[in-house]
Amino acid sequence: MVAAYAAIFSLVGKLVDERRMVKSAEAASAACFGLLTLASAALIWAFVNRRFDVEYVYHYSDKALSMFYTITAFWAGQEGSILLWAWLLSLFAMWVILQNRHAHQESMPYITFTMMFTLCLFLSIMVFITPPFATYHFKPPDGLGLNPLLQNPGMIWHPPTLYLGYVGFTVPFAFAMAAMITGKLDDTWIRSTRRWTLFAWLFLTIGIILGGQWAYVELGWGGYWAWDPVENASFMPWLAGTAYLHSVMIQEKRGMLKIWNMVLVTTTFLLCIFGTFITRSGIVGSVHSFGESSLGPVFMAFLLLGIAASVILLLVRWDDLQSQNEIDSLLSRESTFLYNNLVLMAMLLVVFIGTVWPFISEAVRGQQATVTAAYFDKINVPIGLTLLFLMALCPLISWRKTSVQNLKRNFMVPGIISLAGGIALFILGIRKGYPLTSFILCIFVAVAILLEFIRGTTARHSRFGEMYPAALGRLIWRNKRRYGGYIVHIGVVLIFVGITGSSSYKIEREVFVKPGEEFQLGKYTLKYEKFSQYETQSKLVNAAIVSVYNEGKKVDILTPEKNLHFKGSEQPVSEVSIYWNLAEDVYLILAGFDANHGATFKAVINPLIVWLWIGGTVMTIGSIVAFWPDKKKKTSPI
Image 1: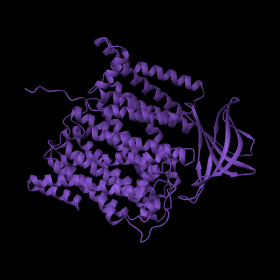
Image 2 (image 1 turned 135 degrees about the vertical axis):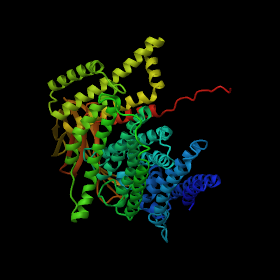
Image 3 (image 1 turned 60 degrees about the horizontal axis):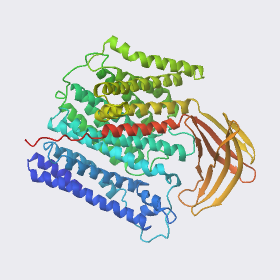
């Protein structure tokens, strides 16, 4: 009721020019945050105090569950995750109102309306469809327990970071809608939401990386990304958000691509809602989804309303959104940003079609078609390599126009080094087309970006006489947006290295061995030492002890497990064991066992995969640098 009041009176107050109504609506928005904080605290209290008469607590915890996982069970299921989403949205709405209490007075009522109307969606779902405080008429002595797959540090941080990204994109969307409604279509709304966009993109990135890491260590299949519909649901808004982050720089610099930016920010937000729809509607079968529910029609109605409102506003403001300038040359930084956007959107289209095709097939033919990972890989690999090339091109090209002479000079060093690197890799045995191309491009991009740091650092050293480390630090800190972006691109290069190595040169083997026997996996020898079985408070542990040798030297002991949990899962749950270094992972799964006769192991070598996680960390660092605000300059009182 309070959220609906805030949405209605912010709009009505603006239309009738009654400032007190608008202020009252803003106060109601803050009240929503207070009430949702109270509700969230109540649910956590119910978990901590083992209130198993609350259905949600009963389904996702038990007495044996550690307090750490008991508290994080808050977002383990449908009801709690919706409450978390609503709480974050109310927090961001209040934050935006406080940030802009003396600014954007004409736009703020529409911004408040957009955010509170969205909040009404999630609150209505909580009240009428998935109430988190539904209770039994009696108090069960114990709960059903938390799914063992969720009892992993990755699943503690993955959902909240993903939600921070999803919810964060509501802010730039609300500002975009307000800009179109008021007709204030310059880049003011973009500058006002730049850090909000970076914030949302950063946490969405972290959420995706953490999700891949969780899948890798917990699901026991040897991979980290399977083009699962729910994985795609988070990847699609990331692609659109990435395109938007690049595209807005052209509008800020040249006053161009205004329509395109409106489309991108709207698409990003709606894809966040679409991702929530996929995860919670039950229309997909996925280890990541929440199962069947009646939420689908509600989210679909909101999506259709959002699309309709956005299209109408775009058509109304079409003439006002025309660009002030045109691209002067195909060899300019503006053009590379545009190419980058087109490639990102092409990948988004491929992923979207592959994700929704089974639903369309079932609706039309009554039979759900299967879209395999091969479809996504076959099309997205060349698209991804094109994107990598454009990343190399952008730092080497000037705004407006680049002369052929400058292009040759800027390309010479990265080109020579990457060509030499490619020859060396070919000699070392990397001769497949796509992997070799990917590694050459990675070298090219890394060298091109490194040269940018070297040029800037050398210039500061020459001009100010600073020591090189100090010059590098000040170069980055005084140009945080630019060099933070370069650091992010280095992270992307490292992720490409990890993806290329692990997908192209994976070695996989399944063997049955008896205690004391050995088997070979690439250059490693694995010896099955013994089988161990014991009980803990929550599970029956079945563990194999396996020694890992490299060229006769023992390098590690792996203990893959296949455990039977007393609660939370009826099926045995695999716990993988990994020996890793910077070159490769030895990934071992206990696929089956006979305590007396032997065990079946699935063993995998994943080359270079650790660089995927290192790359995600570097991307996070770069995003934080770009996000970090500058110190406010002191102004004279006169």
